[in-house]
Amino acid sequence: MEETRRKALLEEYKELSEARMGILLEEDGEDPAQDEAYTRVVTRMQELEEEYRQALPLLPVSRCPFTGEVLEASFDVQGLGGLWWLPDNAVRKDEEFSRRPSTFFALDGALHVGGPVEAAPFVRFLGPDRPGVVGEVLSRPEVKAVLSTMRVGEDTLWWVAYFAHPMVHEVPRINDYGADRYQVRGEDGFAYFDSYYWSEEDYDFELEHWVREGKLLWIKPGDESLGLRAVLLAGDRLVDPALVEDAKGMFQILQGDTLAFLSEAAMSMEDLEDGGELDPELLEALEMMSMEDETVDGQNGERED
Image 1 (cartoon, rainbow, N blue to C red):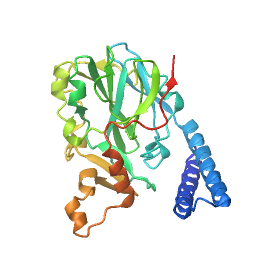
Image 2: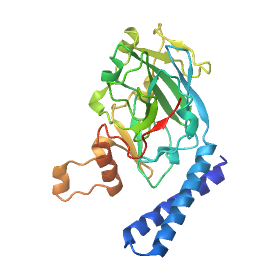
Image 3: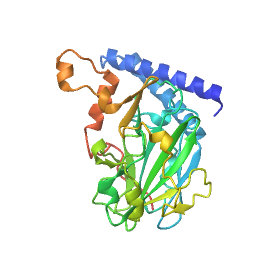
């Protein structure tokens, strides 16, 4: 998408979001004109979401260690303020799910912010500031993961893709990177959305032992062929040390154009009781994250043969 059009689209979407919230706050339930205005706003927002979705590139980001199939994912390479990052309705390519290998289990990520960030009127969850794996998931005998690296302007994005063979259904998956949910095909063949939030304590950021154990493979940064590497040779680095020198292994959020760590932004209840204030949008997002293993209503029952 041309940068000028993207900027205009996001600005209009922001204005519509504010208008939608204003209508909801004033709604009395008996005003047909109010209902019509709400419908117009939501319809236009959906039109902008679809335009944005169609413009998203579908990128090869990883490779299955069991089948060799390439995993593709959509991503907004133009900035961190796009609708791709919407915390409760992330806009992604429709075909992204159907093109995933049958062995796909989860797609997580981490981000090193290396330059100025793009502002947005919603909170964005960027994942940890260095790549890690969820030990409870990767320790399963059926599961392997692949670490890959993508440069996005001045930022560095690490994809951590999990694959399983045979497929595992007993362990919660990991929400799609940057989103509040994941899509999965159940044992009955039906596709549905579900949600599960792993905590910072569930992540292991010491990755080399997972490579030695044969559980974590990696793709050399810049390797467009996505060749899988199973060992670390002399001089090999899973992660550029300069990028993680000051990393804390903590979840990051963006509020406006301000980067913060989630656990530091989320004030304790004692702080709140003493008169502290928590950003209402962040509070809503945190409450959403507290509902572990929550099925997203109204998204079940789509069968893909």
